[in-house]
Length: 156
Image (tube, rainbow, N blue to C red):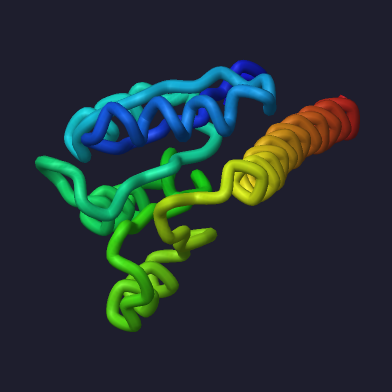
């Protein structure tokens, strides 16, 4: 993930998109938008998404279907997802979301302050995870190079 990773907001209602963007703009992170599950998947697969805010009921691939697909792919399985629902508490939805590793299930209308707080935390946590993954790869490469150098030195 590059430093300018986007928070992708997915909702098929323009008013909701605008309200969510307005709530998250003060975080200062780039925002993206999609109006269907299929469009969201295309953007996610292009990369550079650090957090997904996803309405459960969007045209095309629904919210849960999008998350199921993401969790099967290594490149997208760790992107945090906040599912948004206008249908109140639903035990089946909650169980499905938990089973897919959804970070949060948020009822609409959302409190902008709470949304900013949760989204900011999830976005930072994902960036920290990616930074640690890069550091581990760099350390493994350095260790491999040191071992290779030592083996070459011992042969001579």
